[in-house]
Length: 275
Image (cartoon, rainbow, N blue to C red):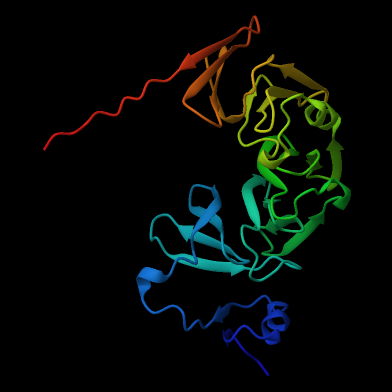
């Protein structure tokens, strides 16, 4: 039987029909108004100039939004992934004619060929998985190499996009897990900053910064002393890194030239508004 789309309940036919690569629409009696519909919320996105490509938070799929017309189009589904997977991918990067997707709860790296329209996957080692719902986070592009920074995955993953060869950088793991303030519940890294081909990764789970040389694949650990610090985000200005703490209103400033660390307490600027 020739069909164009599936519409109906979430039965076993959904998984079977997913193999066709055609659109699937599931009916839900719980959706009563447009105000309750939030299925196209997304966080992983890539802007190629003409389109914004994105993956939804609450199910498997790749969409593109035309920036001029604001028309949204379903591109397709990622193979061998849960149709109802939540936050399957956390970031998107482009090399040559392909989009690469960082697996969050997904089983593998997703790949979409912009020329052929074909989906594929690149498997990752299961032995480094410590949390199957939050594996890898952001992607850093360095020529033809992609660096996937870990959330709970016990390695920085390096993908050669020309050969699909995958390497695993794990030296930092033992240091972090043996550190005095290690908190496994927080995960490894949230944000990063690239400075002169060195990737600075402030730790969420302990008071340290991992520095990865993208040319030599050497890893350096900057130990920040006896204070229990967890970092949420980082940005660079001139020769300094500004690091926001995971808890509290404290900003840490790292001088990249002399290695000095300055602590800045942020004041609460909120004022009472009188009517």
